[in-house]
Length: 253
Ligand code: BJW
Ligand code: ZN
Image 1 (cartoon, rainbow, N blue to C red):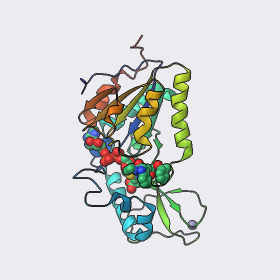
Image 2: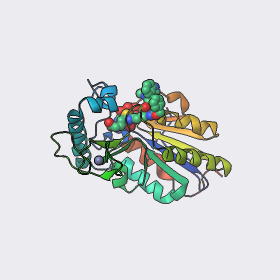
Image 3: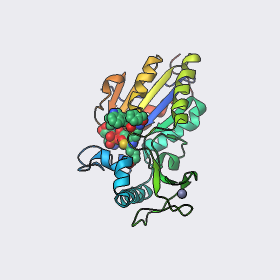
């Protein structure tokens, strides 16, 4: 546990940020794991898997319609806003990656890599039409494609499914370029349990590239040992303070 103070982000630094469900908890969106979690009493392998979806697509669509309602009723909080502000100041020197599908970073003004997809896009299992924006919440039964009659699914990434290779490439390139430019590479993980591959390995990738790793979480995550510094508390309190130094002013001369 480290005392809360602005992170030393210099004008030459590259900042990679990873967020998880914990950052949206104070916006009123339930996290996945834990006693009040979305999956409390549910088997994640059933809820968030292609097999679970195929077994009962109507149940799955009702689950996601409910999540859409929750996300639409929620508003970005101070942590989402602080990241958007840091992104404006640091420009291409910051990369925001989120595991969240709730769209709150985008609504706060960021343009994140949504590595687990989006709750507000749908795609077809039956035809090659591209994923399309979809905010429908009045869903009583599994949705069928208007073009081919096939089963529609939310454009999210379930267990056992590959992440978009372009997203992984962008993250690895960001790390590689920082090393190549000899810039200070910093990684900040916010509100994530460190339970899910590959996001739970980003800290290792950064350390292999000689970067420093910071964590802002409520409780120690599964990969706590991969962080140089840890701040335990609410994201709406810690993140605005931690990012207060992200103004392009050199502070690590
Ligand atoms: C706060 C806070 C506050 C709270 N302030 N903090 C064996 C078999 C098959 C697969 C695997 C296997 N072993 C490993 C795998 C790979 C698998 C995996 O990692 N499984 C593990 C669970 C074991 N990963 C995958 O399958 C990934 N794909 C992949 O690897 O492809 C290659 C491959 C294919 C096949 C086999 C092997 C490899 C895909 C992962 C996709 C994850 N998808 C989900 C569902 C999205 C759609 C949906 O919502 O339904 O993404 S799972 C779920 O977990 C969701 C989240 O993005 C993700 C991470 O959750 P997160 O964000 O960490 O949330 P929580 O709730 O867990 O934690 C919240 C944290 O916040 C807590 O720590 C709190 O303390 C904190 N907190 N309030 C600050 N106010
Ligand atoms: Zn179709």
